[in-house]
Length: 81
Image 1 (cartoon, rainbow, N blue to C red):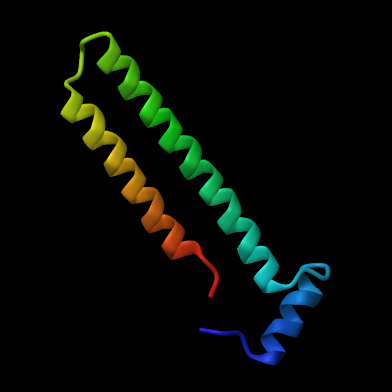
Image 2: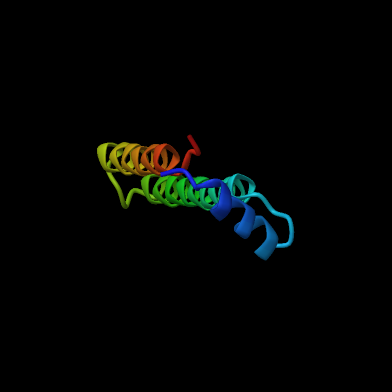
């Protein structure tokens, strides 16, 4: 739902000149940065477990695919339209 002109002007005035779209993009970028770091952490942790023999190859791959799917879903949700 888009902001009305009056709402957007009030937001810009209250936020010190920051447009709502710019703020939303900044929040989206921060969220995606954390999700990509989480994905890397999941991949590294499962790789270490697989390498030491504590996890099967299917478990290693399924955890990475699962984390990648969640990252893609969040990216789709937070992408500004």
